[in-house]
Image (cartoon, rainbow, N blue to C red):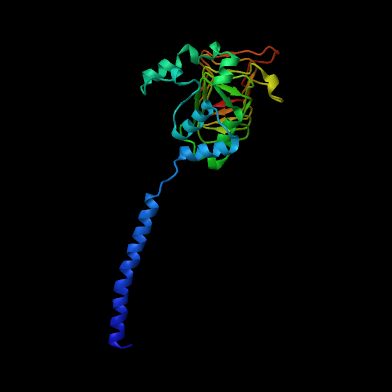
Length: 258
């Protein structure tokens, strides 16, 4: 190759390489500036695709699951008036958010969340990635249907506080971060949940944190924790357990706690 040919190729490289770098930079800038879908939007879209129209409470549940916030069953008048702990505590203790004051008409009409929606948020790895580490946290809602989380591996807390869950909860052989049911009333009407014989069926459940059945928790049928493993604590302070069928209201045989 002659010196002139080599010099000509060198000039081509000098011109072409900067052009390629400039084009790459422009492409990267366009990609980075393109609007990105937020996790809340994505989870909401998936929920709408699955369930169609979401009622206002269900919409709050989906958005709060993605953002790590609390989903309040009631409308704005029943929610905290500010972001402080004092405001949240005040809202939590409003009579309108207490399940003992709930009527099926008012709560089922205005605070209803389909139990299938709660399972749907927990059962698929793609959706679980879109749920914040604080998990599902619902206060003062009517859960329509039996909450079936059996055999699921859930890497975030499931918190249903001061909710009415008349058809009960099934967490048989599930693995979960935390299960909090403080102040909730469960198992009032198992006739609408075929195969559900306990208010809470937790046989073989594994919990990496705590289980809260306290602070006004009310079970109208047996709470079965047979063979449950809890790495944290089981709190039952101010919890009420009953079973008119004559079964032990709280079954803890062979359960283990660390």
